[in-house]
Image (cartoon, rainbow, N blue to C red):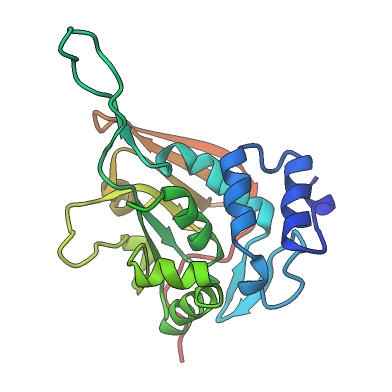
Length: 249
């Protein structure tokens, strides 16, 4: 269905992804409608296909970004804690917000999915886009500044772009023990890096492509439950650029 999901505008692209059941969650559809892919893709922004963005990097096809967002959705939405006993001794939901959601987008590239994730986490959330070279970090931020909504997210500190080795995860200065509710990895790792698993909150989820010993790549989800138990699940085959050292020269 992916090859039939291209459109002539952002709205038609998203509608076709929805019609072909590549987006199935209304909240994800709404977030994709709020982020114009033309601000992030260098050409043919409404084609459901990956595109080269320079520096040995690509922007993934929209259906892959949609799949990642839907997989991570339970760990993206603003958390509401169930309430305490009322005066009559009856449990009720108070609607109090829990701790803000924290999302790490490794290999953020164009910044497109970073922006979509920020639309989903809400006003109290934080999304950090992590890249291994400064030009890609700068590209993501510059693309986000093309829209008023993107500029507001940056100015409010709800989205931050950083440079670092994604294989080691990321800790914001002064927030070393905060961890991440969700980690998205947009490049193929050589293994399920344990440092990334360690940085997951409990509960938390990671969405990551991993290359096996035969050179084949598969999407994995790594779930950590509230007790810290980890479950790893292989999903389906993909083709991503590798999660590696910064290019030489």
